[in-house]
Amino acid sequence: MTVSNSLSVIDGQKAEVNRSLPYLIHHVRGRVRFRLYSLKDNPKYAANIKQFLLVQPIINRVRINYVVASITIYYGYTGDSLKKVASVIANLIQQAATTKSL
Image (cartoon, rainbow, N blue to C red; front, side, top):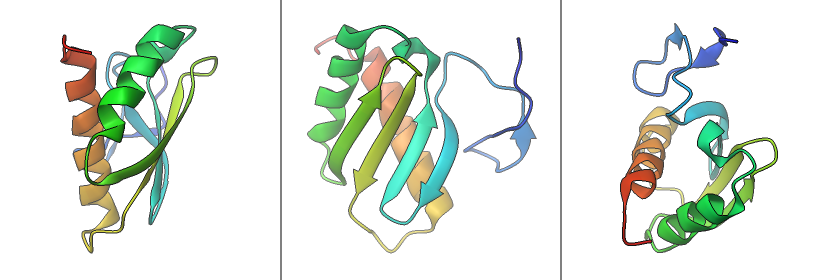
């Protein structure tokens, strides 16, 4: 099944979802939610992602629902645009997924 109504963080255009990458579900100043299918029913992986994100200076709190594969991140307002913050956080999630030292 492909989902064609998700928002691409990089270009802001509707795009087909790459299930290995995080995609933006919802974003308001101070909170962003992504879908990340690799979290699905994988609590150990979810804990590793959370651990990595919580040491980042911009991140205040992380809530992960590995049953539905979503990650909600609370962050300190930086003055940057919502799009830029979402992009930075998406990149952090990708870095966390590839970091072997977790």
